[in-house]
Length: 168
Image 1 (tube, rainbow, N blue to C red):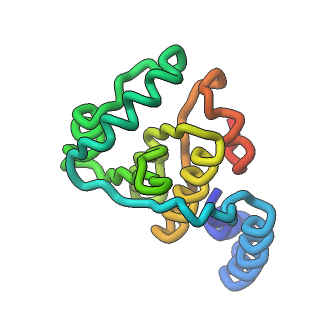
Image 2: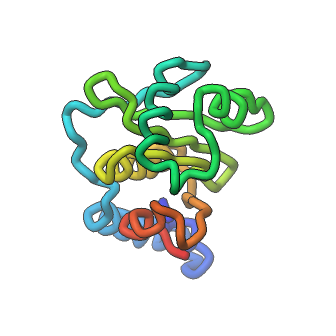
Image 3: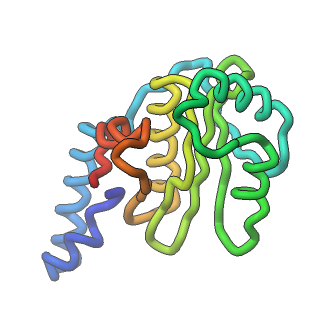
């Protein structure tokens, strides 16, 4: 959960008291969560707004390493179709670069109160942690009340999301 104030207000009816408790609770959550993950100085995030050929290079290399774990081709054509050409949805596609090479991406969708991590792909565990932390920070800035990542338990990233506080 991103902010505890909405949940607390339903339990504690005094608005000022619930805000004070949630403020303290959010500070504690920030301290103990991996949201404050320290990033590698060579990592850089970019929002993608149109088709990019450099993504095909990343996809080809990633697919060669993990073809047994990936069910859907995620080349630039797929990403444009699935995330960039969706006029009825507020979706954003962010890539993570390390020394100017794409090493992962995350697709985010924002609704009124819920932020969805729609898709994520990372070449290393460190990249994955960067992408998850970035997503949480992104939704916090959007003032989203909760973040959802839907996955089966056998998803290769399931345990990593649990480390960031996501629950079944």
